[in-house]
Length: 296
Ligand code: GRG
Image (tube, rainbow, N blue to C red; front, side, top):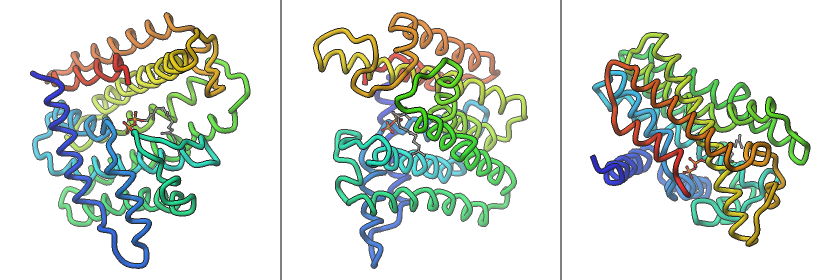
């Protein structure tokens, strides 16, 4: 298997799915629809929809069309969170995915509205599929997972704890909470949704949640490592704390070596869990390696 070629094929497919679900830009609300399309179709690794699809296959799912509305909805929710995270009231970022952020291009009000619209539209897509489906129970269960994991008990909860603690010293427990909700929750939802749509039993769904939790933590620590090494390159000297972002991270608490070793251990534990399944999905295993050793 050529992983990079396979990855590109999957990303291209997801881009097509997203394009097909997004509303065209028209009418008096055209500007917000343009902003939705700008933010969603502007690149991105598409990790979460890929995880839905690959977990579905791993769990024995065969009719991939059932996953598409969930893949689209997941990426819309992820994108809304990025738009809002980039706003002046939060991280105040000017660039995302190598382009100007949505609020910089369209203004703050439209940025907020585009994020809100993506969140609503994600559930509209899924509910429409539920209405049209004869097997709606598992789709409703998957929708409930998405709602919970993206909401106050998931991503929003993690983002809240992060925002209110900005500039304050964080201990390991609080940092774990932030990581597992802010970054982990949508990754967990992705793998759980794949399993639910493939009619998996509760034990398998829980195993996917645990696996995803390790992937999410490894992914976030890798992100912290990249932030810090990026800052070191920018300012041309070693730094003991994340001076650029003024944030406590796993790396600032534990150092680079321990962080690298934590990423390796989480990644191999997640791979062991996947290998304990009856079916195999080699691409999924390669994806975990890619996510946890990535350098951008
Ligand atoms: C505003 C409710 C709300 C939540 C924001 C996503 C998020 C929560 C914050 C983004 C800040 C951040 C850097 C989080 C760490 C890891 C992460 C989620 C990175 C972005 O996800 P990728 O790498 O992005 O999958 P792409 O662009 O590839 O889709």
